Length: 194
Image (cartoon, rainbow, N blue to C red; front, side, top):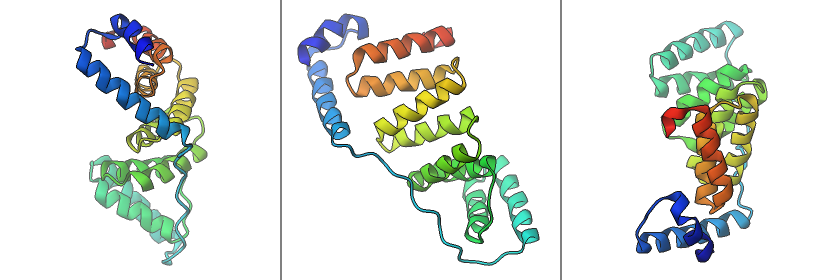
């Protein structure tokens, strides 16, 4: 692997020899983790724990939306979760806002679950696919993030951020040719990345 990396050194950038060795060792460790098959699975749906009328659920959703759009993610997550725990069913965008609120509040595990629900409820939403992939990446679930970024790219082939992030994953996994291809596509989609 070292020889291959040195051959690509000119295409990737000029780094010191010591830094190259560190990157190669890191990549070998990451590939080992991915090969072990440790893929993150979504959490289970919370059980119904409170009772709310339909009117109360709708009021809570409105309040949660207001908090969300004002950037008060802790309060919006609390209100969305109350609706879920009362047995209320959210649409894809509400699940996405709940997931984003949890993500902003650094509750990545639960955010991933609700991003999955958002993607399930809004399968053509590139935004929720992108955010799910980003959360999976932050949890070091590179196979999961790769798969979901590919879905986001299918939904919007010109999304430079998804293409760039996919390249970043390939780079972390020492998949140099795939990384370069993704980076090139990202630059083609958005020349300001160069």
